[in-house]
Image (cartoon, rainbow, N blue to C red; front, side, top):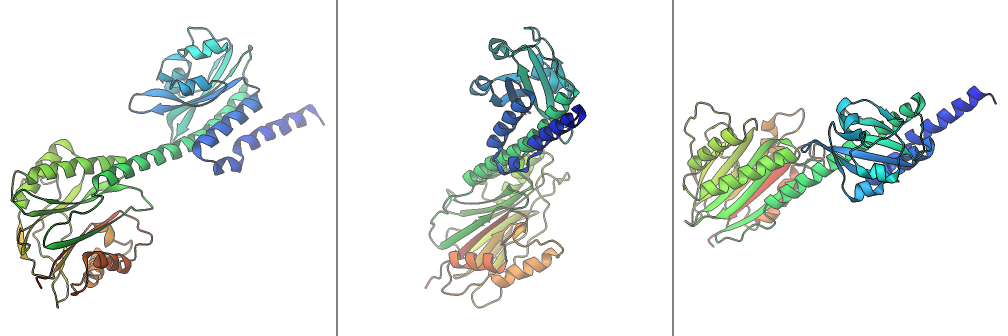
Length: 407
């Protein structure tokens, strides 16, 4: 076998080791560990490490290492632009140090380890630097073009894993936040039966849908349902702030329209750029009437005993934070006779791709009934079944209020 053939075979072995599909079957941390092990073996390196970018602090954080495990254990952080790894991240280009000196590196562990030569490449995602992958030698070494190409290929694999890891962490954080803000159990209050459902949209992840139920000092029962546009942690955070603010405003006014007006002002000032819809209903202490105000949110569906359900007719006031004319918001009062059922919901329950939303609302209206023996829980279950939400593409929140029959 000729020298060129041997080189080609070695190059192919290296590429196969880095692009091996079995790496994708590992979870992110195991995949990064295995990738570093292969890189160290293929380059004959003594150390290999991955530092990922913390976008908030603009620092590189030691995430995985072979031969430099102390970096990870100590949580080493390197500012962008400083030291060897910081230089790689700042330039977005490979950096080679044929002879390491104290002036070249910020992390003392590299010097304590006795590293003499270093090669680092940026980890990219969608053209942006999200981290650095570097290898080191305990003896002087001249890294060549093949070494750089191999390390860049490994960085591509690490970049994909880093993106997945980041997305999973954000989704987990958003889900934890959203679950902490949704009532774990609904309150038991005299005169009404309550049930709710929340289903995350599997395609897009966690969003800003929420519902809330609370008893006010006046004896009225507050019912809220809302939706912050977008998905992920950012929307969940905005949702949490909006929910808390509305709770506070309900304690200073008994007018649902005024409470939403105050919330509107807050959203315009502090949450500019987010589109939020919300509906606030107040059920009287005797449970016989409901005062409702909506900020761009779909109206609830009301079912009366012995009659078909209908969507409650409400004035179309704008969503929160978008009306620069500051028009007065309006409230509507409806009767809630014994046995009646009210279904509050977010648009994920009725929206379908390629279908007018009116069709979804009609489907929901047909599903809401006020049968004498039906509880809020059984009605909730029936609605979810009829609305066919096996694969929702948006978050879904549903809250059913059923007034007890006086008999």
